[in-house]
Each structure stands twice: as C-alpha cells, then as structure tokens.
Length: 308
Image (cartoon, rainbow, N blue to C red; front, top):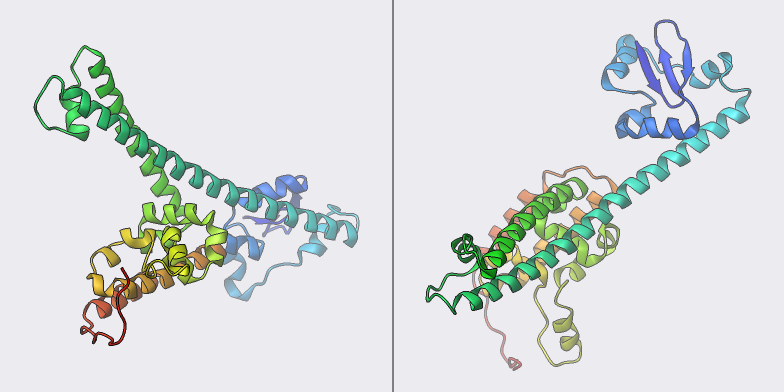
C-alpha cells in the first residue's frame, strides 16, 4: 500500500519511494492532509495503522530518499524540507486569511442588505398608503402588491428579491462562521459571532482582547461618556442580543454579560489557536447563567445616589 510522506509516496511492501514534484506541489498535496497526518508524515489513518500494527515504526525517510537518489545529499534534503514547510505555512495562512476576509465582507454585505431592505420597505409602505388603507408592512405588504402592473409592483418584486438575497447571504455567513469560529458560534450563535468578529476587526484581534473589552464592544460611546463622568458604566454592548442577557432580569444583566464575555474570550482564543470544538464551554456558560438568575436579590447600597 502506498503511504503519503512529505516529499512523495512510499510503498510499504517494497520500500520504494517516489518524488511528488517540486516544493510547491508537495505543499499543495500536504494541504489536503489533516493536521495529525501531516505531523506524522503519513497520509491517512489506514496508512498509519498499517505501519503501527505489530509495533512497526515509521521508516527513516531521509535515508530512503538518499538511497533512491531523490536528493544528492543531506543539504539538499534539508533545503527541500525547509522550503516545503515554508510553502505549506504560507498556503495555510493564505487560506485562513482568505476565509476570514470573506467572512468580514459577507457580514458587511448583510448589513448593507438590511439597510436597503428596511429603506425600501418603508418607501413601499408610504407609497401603498396613497391607494390602500390596509396597514400592512414588510414582506407581507410586498407580497400583496406583487401582481401590480405599475411601478409600485416593480418595487414590491424588488423587495421580495432582496429578501431572498438576504436569506441566502445570511445562510452562507452562518456556514462560514461555524467553520472559522466553531466555539464562538456555539456560544453566541453564528450571526452574533460573525458580528463580534467583524466589530473586533478579525478573529486574531478578537482573541487578543480581554473579556472586559468584549463585554462593552459596541457601546463605546456610552463607555467614553462614563469615563468623562457623564454617564453610568455600560453593562454590555452588542452581546445584549444574546439570550443569556436578554432573558435575564435587568438587575443581573451586568453579571450575565461578564460571564458571557469571559466565555467568548476563551472561545475566540481556542478558535484562533487550535480550532477544535470545546464541548465544555456552552454547558459551563449555561450553568453560570442559571446561577446568576437564581441568585437572591442583594441589598441596596446606602450613601450612593443614582446619576441622572
């Protein structure tokens, strides 16, 4: 059976090796192999099992390559290995940057579509009031005017098409977010996770932010007013949309926001540096939110007046 190694293929029965091509071809082929298989120098779990069975170990690839004349000496072997590793790292970085850039553009496009749809629906409502007293709005109004022959019918059809476009863009956005940030998506939902990544300027910057910054992300104006002494400290920013906060009474929303932001900070770092799903994050967050919601009401502090 042929086993994939970093510079080509190895026939485990005959012990013959074959060169796959230049360093670029080698790196491209290794891109398709999982992280574990790439680290092991093997090309799949079946191939790994065939070598590991009976206590067998991986053969000396350097000696095999030199014996077959694929490389002139150790210096050429080391040079090819180094160039292949660098090419593989570049390709992985481009792939990650490309996927993240696509995500940021998609969330911006979705926001633009939301704004356009809202504006056109409002215009359609004002227009329809000239001819009909029915107080329909949004997609229902557009569907009721779909068969109109005048310009208002054309606008209604455009609104419905934009609704379908927005649905398609949102679906692709959710799919991309789950692939790029599975832990964030599991904690906050794909749509909110994408908005948090976009607001931070990327997953890398988000993973470097403290939980306190994630908690008030989107409430910068209120935070600056608080720092100038003109407003109370904001309890949360855009994470307010999360059910853990919206479903919590106003008295405990600050604590719920801190708990959620702490888990989001952990999830973003796991997504950035490992990409593996941590199954314990979401249950731990749910338990903490339940504890906060079931907490007895505390006593009001004396001697402090509420700011107006």
